[in-house]
Amino acid sequence: MSPKPADPEIRIALVETAARLIATEGLAGLTLRRLTREVGTSTMAVYTHFGSMDELRRAIRSEGFARLSEHLNGVPVSDDPVVDLAMLGRAYWANAIENPNLYRAMFMDRPTGLDDAGVGRDTFDVLVDNVQRGIDAARFDRGEALPRAVQVWGLIHGLVTLHLAQLLTAEDALASLHDGATNLFLAFGDTRDELARSIGSSVARR
Image (tube, rainbow, N blue to C red; front, side, top):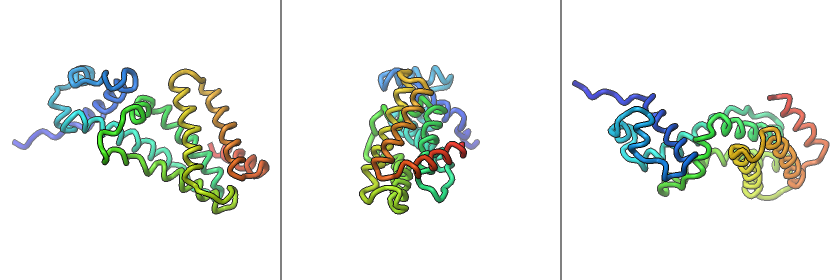
């Protein structure tokens, strides 16, 4: 008889439950025995699907960034890079709200190795590319896109984290995101009139 194929539903249950344990209790809360008990499966299932607990942690990181990438790639490219940056911010927010445990776990847990450290880089590259589009379109002053993208990422990541920690309501966090992005884009060189039109267009696209 051929071996029974691995159940993909068990695999995702292990990933999501492990992410919840890390998100709510830290890495110390993730043990093999507790994980399999909460999922209702055997310890062998972890080794069947991942090979080791370290590989499971890599899978959490990969799944978290894969879902983020799906949200970001769902933003259509327009002829206005500032509109697209605003829409990417909303996509980032939506992913975190839909996947709060994976979101927290993929940033709380350190990479398990050099290969793991590069996971998710493509999601940041999307942001860098769109900031560069703003520079190329003369909406932003000439300069390096990378440090500006880090500032945009830091703004939204910080507000998402504050909201998930229940330190800011969604309404307050989104209002601060709007104000913070406005201040950043003006500092990057955009004009108030052009920025107002772009923000208005991004709201209409929701």
